[in-house]
Length: 451
Image (cartoon, rainbow, N blue to C red; front, side):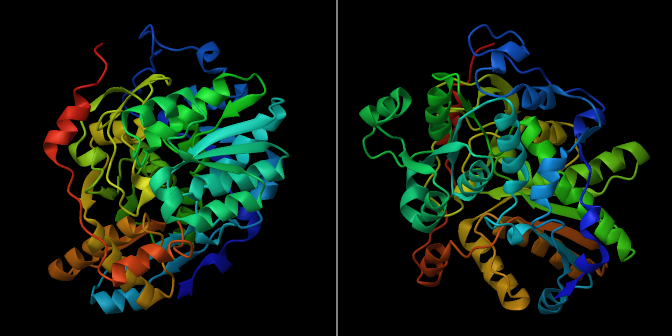
């Protein structure tokens, strides 16, 4: 592995987050109140979020300062390394130069602490005592449990039931940092009980888990809700990734022709891509940007751009996003962090403006790509990250066929060390491909709100 991390001192950690909303040629559509369908104000979000995060959510300022206390925590693992994948290039027989930003060096093994730390910080500053959240595969829950422990907050995590059962070590990680982890849907909330009454064997979804976490947060003044993806302020916090990558590439005389990221809710994709997109919008030299998602949850490739609820129980505001419908419950494939029914409004807006391309891949081919990458580079990716791996691989194969020496950059958003059951199942031939039927998507979309 050829690391360029040594060319960036720790002091190169960005001092500001970058906000792509400042450079969009068209503004984002407003967020609407779930009851009145009128644009929400800060007072509508106050029961869930502290004032600083609400300000960031609606901000159109290009640069937002990172508090010193947050930077000091992030410096425990940032700047994260950027690697040139020379051995993988050789294995693929491509003239392309492939670089990957490796977020698996964080304490929880993924990019998620980049937003968990500031969210916990701002909640503590606002006098909050307890935080509720949801998690799919467990990376977000693990990161928030860690951050809450750092800032002296209680943490309650509703984990999608299928992942709760598939990934016990993620649950153990959360519990190590004193978080309470509950499988969702659960009997502890009205939303969970309603789902279980209708389907006692429900395997859960991120939309259901969000409903449970939001319900608990809304009932107590000293409790806030935190989300690990989708929202504008979450994507904002992740832009330290792309800012670092830009400097690291510049240090070796490179700039990306193609940027690849996996997409579930959109946060790690935004983290790697948004700083480059913003620069391209300002100077007129946009890179190709490819968003990769699972064929079993094809939000960008099959979901229309529409106003929809962020959760199953319709407790959250309406946002304009690519969506499969808030009642969509995807199958229990192993990339639990990519099983969300909607896409971040800012990522959806990028697709609307033609700033990104969207592709989907099946489970087996993503695992095959991840194994090939691991055999060449020595890092086993998380199942979610395998979607970025296969996206980069397809671009490298295109370069091989066309004789192009493009520079490809992708975000390896986490390691697979807690996902060995998924790899065991893959090697044993127990995994299957899922291609979500169009008729079931149509059924879920039939429940979209009428505006």
